[in-house]
Structures are given as C-alpha cells and as structure tokens.
Image (cartoon, rainbow, N blue to C red; front, side, top):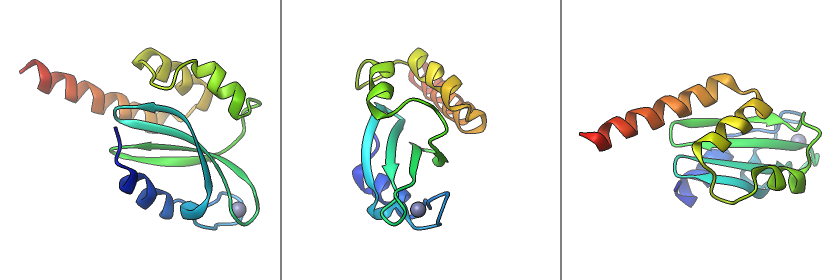
Length: 117
Ligand SMILES: [Zn+2]
C-alpha cells in the first residue's frame, strides 16, 4: 500500500487541469487501492473541477473526469476496494492512460520476478 505521506506529497505536486491550483488540499475520494497504485477522485479546492488522480509507487498522473461515470458508478464498476490486476487492466481501458498503466504493469512484473528468485 502506498504511504499516506507519499500520496499527500504527490498531490501537492499535482495541479488542477483547469486552473492550475495544487491539489494538495483537494477533496480526495479513493476509488480503488492496489499494493502499488491508488486511484482517486479529486475536486479542485479553487474551481471545483473534477479530476481522476492515479498514483503509483513509480509516479502518477491526473486527468480530467472525461468519463461519464461518477464516483459512485466508478466504485460500483470496481466492485471492491482492493482490486485485482485484471480489474486494474479493465480500468485502464476506461481511463485510457496507456503510458502510466504500462509503467504500472512493468513495475508489477519486475516485482513478481523478484519474488520468484
Ligand atoms: Zn481548479
């Protein structure tokens, strides 16, 4: 699980896509958590623009809420709080954040390798 301090630090370096305000004090609602990733819904403290924030141990990104899904629907879509790798891949299709998610998959694969040795 990602450390709270890491998440907070990351959010402070993430900026609203609309007005450029730091999301450090944004209202954050966790949608899904995995050992190496966190997906959350953030509301800009200044202009109330909604963003999807994805944070991984290797970095992350924020993208505007372009999906028609709202937070509740997203949670329903994810089903459970801790998600499997397959579910993350499904979400990947929704978010269409290829670069970030390929990074995440790469990271997971390297972790698996280490565990086998
Ligand atoms: Zn904003």
